[in-house]
Length: 124
Image (cartoon, rainbow, N blue to C red):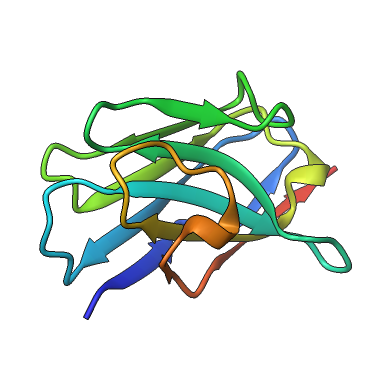
């Protein structure tokens, strides 16, 4: 059974940084597509950062480009979202998702497995 467990959320002041982690277990293939999504109260889910572990290709939403970085460890069993220069509008529950693909996936409907989410709150 594939499981994704996010961690690293919390409360941070505007301009600060956080690193989210997504631990991947139960996946039998070497490579996959991974994405970080977020959802703020009253808003639709938004995809922010995406990675293909096969070739390392990444894609970022304009709202986070230059501030967020997605990466994985050498074993590809943990994926990170490094978030710098955080803004109050980054406040949301952040979810990681895994897709059974070897290319970058940018739409939520393309992902097969989801974590439970971790709260990120940025104070002004």
